Image (cartoon, rainbow, N blue to C red; front, side, top):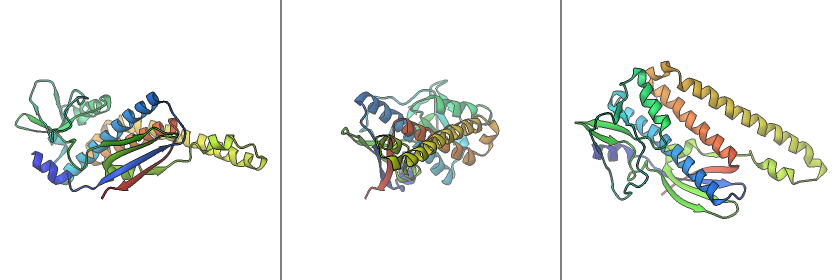
Amino acid sequence: MVSLFDQFYNETEKGLLTIEFSREINPWDLLQYCRKTINNIVKLTTINNIEILLKNNYSESDLGILTFSRDLHENMEVKSYSFNYEENIYIKYFDNLNGDTFWGTFFKLERPIVCLEKDNIFFPIYQHKNNTSVKLCSVIVNCPPVVKIGVNIDVGKTLDNLFFYNENKELKQLEIEDKRMELEIKRIEMESKEVDLISKKIDLDNKLKNNQQHSDITKYLKIVKNGLITQQDILDYNYEIKSRKIDILI
């Protein structure tokens, strides 16, 4: 089973996601940003890994989720690990109507463990030691900070985005008369973007709560992915991120 994971997941390319801030932030805030961002990216990676399995003749009936989050202190040197069966720790995708309990657990936990099950042994589909793993490569604590995270290139491409949100701060410092109109335009653009992000999140939240969406897991996975991307967009908006950029690692 583990060798199959390597076969499927190591076909993907690795990328380096560079996140640039537009201002200095205190170290506690920076750590919180890294925690929330990595949790979002690991969830996106888990969704991507489910999609890889579906392309290789697995189905949602093969999936389940553990009722607890990943251990923060697990050994990163271990290539893989599995869980023995214990009552009430594993939720199969179809244990509840259309996967409601599965997805409810996925969203509730910070570090959800989605697994394949065979002979009462659970194999997590996210591993630390393959090409889909997420790694915090560097945090440059200068002014402003830069965070670099190793990701699956497919996941990285979904987060490859340039931001204009915080140009407003620089424009506010300009007291030249002919910049006032440009400042007003940027302010309107920023307010429109904020409203758009919030509206998009509300729309996605409503879709996620719609049980009928579960009937086609491929469509539902796209909704979940869009929800996580929007969640990261809102986080980056609040932290005044300047840009996100993905580069392929050779």
